[in-house]
Image 1 (tube, helix red, strand yellow):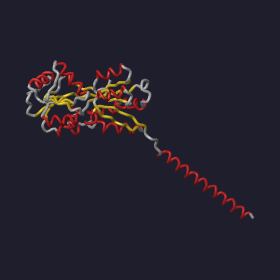
Image 2 (spheres, helix red, strand yellow):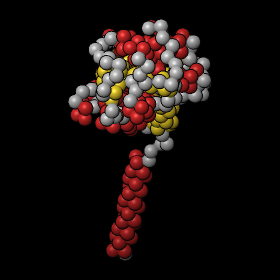
Image 3 (cartoon, one colour):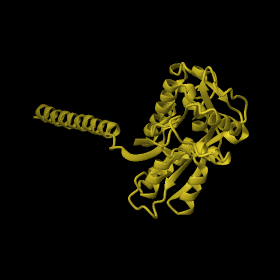
Image 4 (cartoon, one colour):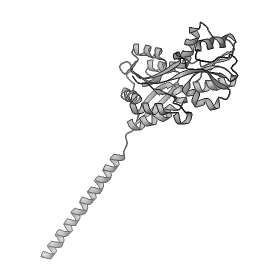
Amino acid sequence: MLKNCFFATLFVFMLLFLAACGNKVTDQADAKEKKTEKTEPTELILATTTSTQDSGLLDILLPIFEEENNVKVKTIAVGTGQALEMGTKGEADVLLVHAPKSEEELVTSGDAVNRKRVMYNDFILVGPKDNPANVSGEDINTAFKTISEIKANFVTRGDDSGTHKKELGIWTAVNIQPAGDTYVSTGQGMGASLQIANEKNGYILTDRATWLAQEKNLTNLQIVVEGGKDLMNIYHVMQVNPEKHGMVNSSDAERFVEFMIDSETQDVIESFGKEDYGQSLFFKYTE
């Protein structure tokens, strides 16, 4: 009798033990599943200039931001004018552009907030290797005048981009309205416009980053004017104002602004291109 009771008790104990083990395994599996389960990433629309994409910088920065924040960034690379217009219509969440005067107008109108200076490089004038206008040095105004006087080919983006705005500002400063067959408007981004200048043996104003990234394919062109103090090219990041445009993803936009001015991101920006081109394509420039 006692023996039977002992075996019955032992059997019940074993059942309880196995049940406990089973529950533990199940709990561990559930915990592991919850740990590996990832929420769907949110989407952030970034409107930016073609130079940040053509240079390859965004290919380095965006995966870092996406991984850290579980965000999928949809990049729309257009001229700065178009990017700013997207901001006024609430069609983007965050902007990365390089036309300071136009950017300030967007902030004044209340369409953009949290504007921060991110980085800079410079504009340069490139032209045919035989340099028919014989321009050189740092004086961009004199170079534009000479190119116009001898009617050398000049290629313009013609797309209201930051580079196009800068070019038009130089023509205005020298009191010239470029026109005619030698003034070729592409309506395209910086990389494509450089290719057209290469084909037509024309002069073109470009940002240095895109030039360095594309230079090996531009066998007919060389830098002819650079280094002038008025050729600095400054980039800012800003949020589209959620109080004026209620559908924007303001939380991720704010994270993106903070990411771009973070010291670690700034170091990545300044190191970008050094190994491949022997110099930085952009320099950190935080406020």
